[in-house]
Length: 139
Image 1 (cartoon, one colour):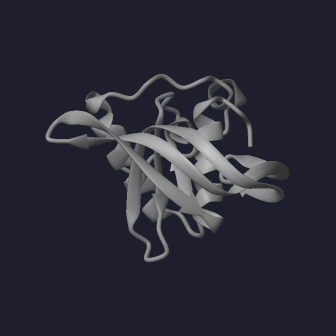
Image 2 (cartoon, rainbow, N blue to C red; image 1 turned 90 degrees about the horizontal axis):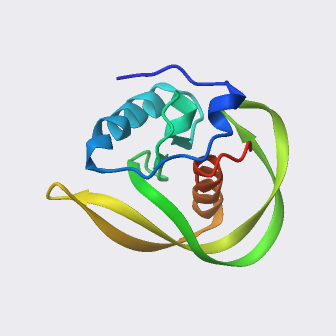
């Protein structure tokens, strides 16, 4: 279901709770919502008012990818970047890694399964942005 974006800093600044298999509907809401938005690349659950560690991003082909409980394992090539955000009006400067390894969960056969993946470039920047959202950082 398409949800309204949350601009409430009290919600956006909360550290999100660990996601479970029961949060699969939150992931679907994120997919529906991001597909309804123009020029959106990624979205975290707290941006639709749900304080769970669930995120979705669109790849270059526009296909959605869901990450439950994403966490940065390591990064290479730290660089200052300007970022905009769907739920924060001001452009901010953030330090982001050009390449990073991220651990996250996926739902496989009704259970959480830990995965790891390397990201680079803009995808790496989006993933780090969503991890910040999960940690309650206003970006």
